[in-house]
Structures are given as structure tokens and as C-alpha cells.
Length: 76
Image (cartoon, rainbow, N blue to C red):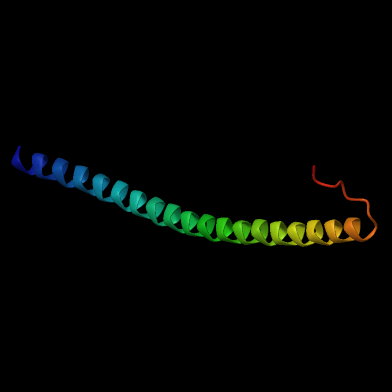
């Protein structure tokens, strides 16, 4: 009976060890994906602020052109 219990416990421990290895692999993969998402968010943030800067430049240029052509509405 003792040998059977030991074998059973050994099998259970082997399954737990295999499951733990799977979990470690998944956590590693998730960590990598999170790091990649962080890089993508950083790149998107840079792109948004770059686009905003360009739009601000166009707005200023348009306002200057409107003033030169007397097309801009005068403040009341």
C-alpha cells in the first residue's frame, strides 16, 4: 500500500510540475505581449502628438493667410 501511495503522489506531483511549467510559459508570453503593447502605445502617442503639432502649424498658417487677405473675422 505504501508503494502505491508513493507512486500516486509522484504522479500527482509530476502533473502539478507540468501544469506549473505551462503556467510559467504562458506568463512569459503574456509579459512579452504586454511589453510589445507598451511599445505600440508609445509609438501611437508619438504619432498623435506629431499629427497634433502639424495641425497646429497648419492652423497658424491658415490664420496668417486669412489675416493677410482680410478674410478673418474681426473680434467684436
